[in-house]
Image (cartoon, rainbow, N blue to C red; front, side):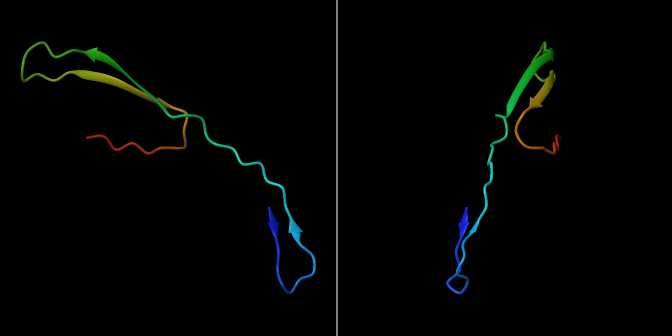
Length: 58
């Protein structure tokens, strides 16, 4: 990055290493299937990679 100012005769030069986070990977595993209509099932959800996340699940 080079920062120039019309008043300052010298440029400011800085080197930066920009990186990206790992890809976000989400997987779901069925723990308990619904056996009949109207019943509920249970899944185990896992997430890894990406940036820090906050989960709010209802």
